[in-house]
Each structure stands twice: as structure tokens, then as C-alpha cells.
Image (cartoon, rainbow, N blue to C red; front, side, top):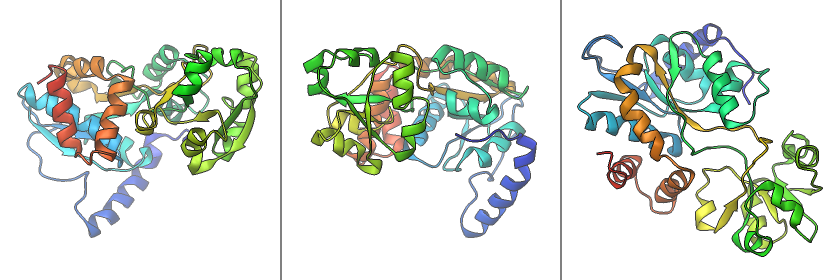
Length: 302
């Protein structure tokens, strides 16, 4: 997770980095402007991080606003929070798909909340005065305890707590650092009272799970292999893992203008929907624009 930084402190560094980037290619944080951000009739600037899953969500937001008659400018593929957060606070970007837990820990490294509603409430308090968040979606992009469907069916697993019913040794696979994280083996013991072994599987975690060399895996909840490899994400009923629900970060001066449209999108943005869209991108080789258009049409939002 990111350490706490003040937005003012990173603004200068972000500006320098972006200036250098502009020498090689077009700068995603600059471009033609119409009215000043937040003014009547202004173009709404939507941003995204530099990976497909986040860009898909940003494109959904952009197309939904355009479908409601608004003018949108896209500034996608910006990079990490150190780069884009100062531009959001300054109003250069006014709408951005974010993740509750990760954003909270960026703003407040001492935050201890983990459950979805608690994280969302704490995030609202931690935001700069000129920013707000709209409704959070049920879709997440976070760590999870995941098993194969065959293993879930064998032991009737739906939640992490259900692992207590497994009648064979449990082995959790994930990156090496998971061994000492609060939601690793020690966390499972302290929060759920369940003993589990650990195997560092790194980039082969899903492959190890499917092969049966581990029977529980730490998999990000937006991973398209959850669908393509027929996996089951176990519900974390006790909030052991930091929740990172998708949430729109927005400038307060346009909050009222976009809230109804974007919150309607958020209501349809489920875990299954997010994974399906990521499958369409990776396996189906569909562009974020095409995936967003289909999502909006399928959900009666355009």
C-alpha cells in the first residue's frame, strides 16, 4: 500500500515527471480545453490509471455521461496515485474510478478499517475538502481467498469461515510477502480460528491452485481467470481483508451534475460484471471502448 503523502508535496514531483513524459509522447494530463473545470457547460474530464481494468470503468463513466448529453474529455493511462492525485485535487481531472481501501491508505496510512462500509465512511472523512466520492460498487479489486469450484462444491464453501469444515490440510498460495501480512495465515488463525499452511507461489498462484498443489489462493477479485479457470471467491464475512470497492472520485463542483448518471452505473457494477469485462478484454481482445458500450447497453444505461 502507498505510504501517506500530502497532495501538495507530490504535486511538484508529478508535474516534473509529466513534463518529461510529454517530450516522448502526448501528455494525458494536457490537451485542448473548453471552459474552466466546473463552470457552466464545461467539458467533464475523466481520467484513468494505466491498466485495462481501470480504463474500462473510466470509459463506462465517460460514455454514460455522453449518453446523458454531456461533453467529456478523456485523459487515460496516467499511472499511479502519486502522479494523478494532484491533478484531481487541482481540478484538471474531475472524475476518476478509484478503489476505497487503497485510496484510504494512500490518504491515511494509519487507517485500520477493513470492512466495506467502514472503509467507505473513513474514506469520506480523509478526502481533501474539494473532493467527494459517489456510491461505491459491489465490484472490488482486492485480495481474496479463492478456491476451485470443485473444491468449493466438495466442502460446500461460500465464505472464508466455511474453510473450518474442510477435512484435509489447507495450504494457501500467494506472493512471498503474504506469509506475514495481516490477512495471511496468521490473520486466518486470529480472525477465523482456522489453521492453514503457506506456499510462496508468486506469479504461478492460479496455476498452482488449478493443479492442486495448493487448495486456497490469494487472487485479486477482478482477475479474469476467476471465470476462465472456474474459481470461487470466498466471502470475507469478518472483514479480515482490506476492502477495495470501486468508487468514483469526483470534484465537488461537478458532483451534483454527474451523480445520478454515475451512481446508476455503480449499481450495475457487480463483481461478476467486472470479471466478465476483464475476460472480454484479455481473452476476447475487445477494446475498453467496445466493452463499455456493451455494458451500458446490456444494463439499460444507454
